Length: 580
Image (cartoon, rainbow, N blue to C red; front, side, top):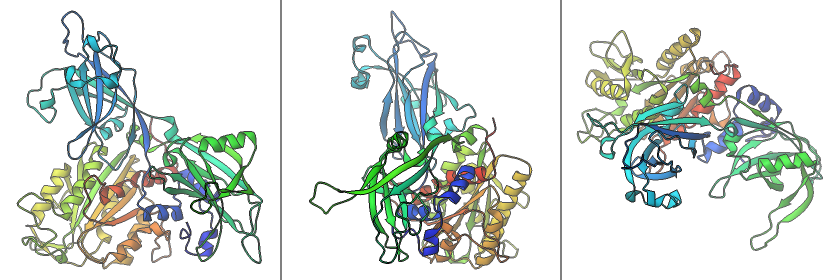
């Protein structure tokens, strides 16, 4: 944790303390130092626990002397088409309209397309006394299956989705599917996902590590992931010259932690301006354990890990107290979706000459006849396939920049579809088609300017806000090079930071993208305009596109994982509540 703060003033600022606590209460404000620490280690995003209830209607009757005895089996479907079983319901006897009691818990990840497959079986009478987990499915009669994404369910206003049951060979698409009944899925976000815990922590009898003064303590609270690695999620302010510190309130969101029983590590450090902070002691407790400490009014002794080979840790005189423990429920990302809020996807593509001649295979814009997507197509698809489920009409504004349309000057924001009147295209296929056509209808030029497309996107977001629409916009900019209007881009971003807008910048090719990292304020330095105005929040995320190994989440999708947090920051700081 020594590198969380780069300097002493930054380290002494309240990170997760009172100032941050207030912003979190109002708007879930970001903890910049911790955000940078997490991001630098590849940890992103929040998650929500979703409880699925399943029912079916008008099932086909496969039994001769009675009705079918149905059971539902739920799978996740990977990108490679492989199915992984998640859960089975109980068997309901003699029912063609079953409403199963067994609930399925699923972790919702915004950044991933989570495909669910539901299969319904008629369980033979001879197996009624067998545990459902032990049933061999090939010995049961198949009644039908249905497929959907989790996003399709949670974006419904009532979180209720009804699907036709079809045969296995018809689920991928058939002109004449048989009528095998219907399956209905209801999604409910668990209350724990909405719970925020406020803690006031205090230590006593800390060890003094400074020569001429007392220690300058601060706390770091980390969650333990499956691999056993601690991931920091919250940090207090630094208290100077204090061996019995009482820190300002900190907030822990269950979405960050996982559950009240998830293991946490509370580390107490002595602050050093060189970044090499001294460990003063550790406590390992869950949120539930911290609640117990508060209820009994007792402190927990800190300990220091001993050298490798020693079985027992060194227990210290120092103790950690929980002076306040309170829980509250906040509106979540899914609450806004249920209220009808939409995410609107927009895309801007770099057509500058540095991409290379599109007709040559070494060009970043080369369209491979074999169908293998280029870097631009990959980025469009990976972002679009996720966001499309959150936009009801699936009409996406699409622009190009840095090219010269036929018989015209260089344009830094032109409609990708070639129209002079409207910028929208139909769905992700529409973006792909417009992109391919534009490559043959414009001449690649330059320079690389972001300001015009950002201002155009901001204008759309601003108009939506003025019309009192509950929408949030996501602009994807795909580029191969260094921008030449850095300050103008900063000005546009600072202005746009007050709007319902986030910007994803994906770098393709091997250019130097250092200036892009300046626009992405993950390191805690907010953008400043030429007039001295500072951005109200960080709305830019940048990543260079790279190949990923099989089974890994793409870097583009890892960027998307941060969108719900940016969305909530905007909504909460402006006291915008979900529509009911």
